[in-house]
Length: 533
Image 1 (cartoon, rainbow, N blue to C red):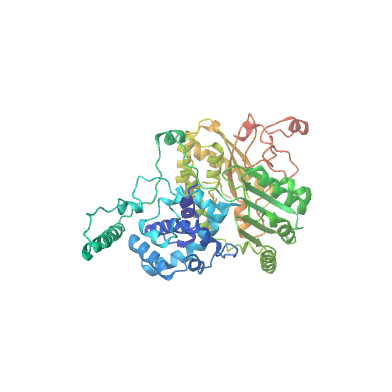
Image 2 (image 1 turned 135 degrees about the vertical axis):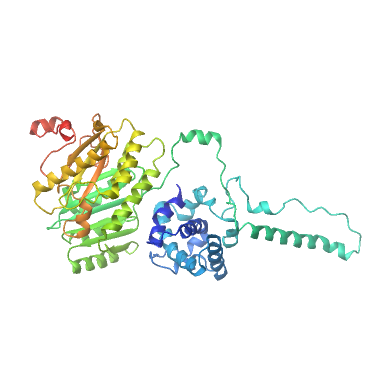
């Protein structure tokens, strides 16, 4: 669990916005480590453990560090180290604190935050500068593993003071040990201050040859993505779309139980991606039985439950306002927000950044499912009525070509989707053309064509509503899934993790499985894999 990387990826963009100053990014990275060490202290955390912390609560930082002198020192030290204005540093820290706390809570799941941070101390301790021990509770990082770097105690000799036996009645000689301690302390302080320009990490763990060998070239356990549930209602408040990303079967079962209790058998069409890349805890699970009936009463609405945040949208502004209010009252521990206006360029840029980051975390021997997920994170924003790969995606796809060479036995299905604008037949044809255009580009860059399958789903497999700009934007997408003719278990498409022959679109009347089987033959709707090339 690389906590600092996770916070840098999730919190820093929210704090910095369009400011891409690397000094500020590095400042926040170091602050996250100090912040995590502070939260690892039970006494500190207990002060606000029962509070509902808003994401924009800039006073939260003052409750974590109640000492004015400590807050001032943190701002000054970080500002000086990273050449950032002190006032700006204070603002960045105040904005980052509540957001980082929410992310850490989400990563911790049901584990108490201090316990979680102490169990994962190796992931952030190396980022803590020496001077920060003055603003951290005593003993917070005392249990750190042996470091190859400099410990705080390394700057002060621990050997007993040696002195000659003093003569009786010698007052000055009696003071010599005290004077020596004072001088030694002054020297130690000077050394500590001198380290601030290039502070040594605290407690950097030693990596043995055996540990390096055991890693087998794999990336260190990466970021755990919060579990999520995305659903939408139709015109008659029926379950129009449903997807979930969860870390285990237990969480999937709990969410399905809540969905079935509200939407009945329609919940069986909810698709789940069950994988250990996702958290095994969803903070809102216990409240779903209360939340879902409220949401169901709003037609043509979308809801994303992720971490401790619920994001909703609806075509009717008055209904949306009431929905936010009702959900917040029903789940006060959650943060409920209305989805903001669609900014296509920002969404595209953010998606490409997320896809790049996911590729960075794949390691040398990536799981094909993780490769497919990483590619699916990108938004491919085709021009209206066209199937030409946008230039914005080409650099990422070129990188994907090299990545796919590392997984020679992987075959991917490229699936095109549209929103519900235009008629169904036109949308189906357009989605097929876009999936084929994606394959053609990858093949032109060197991918073996036999390793890529294509399929168009048109408007039949929505993941959001089709009545808002945001919902239609989400529904217009390209997805990559692993195609395995042997097991036909395609993660990310299966209705549940045990389904061996998933219907690509269980919401329609067609049994369009990825590979033909007995039920396809009986209906005469078998999908010829060769036809999808």
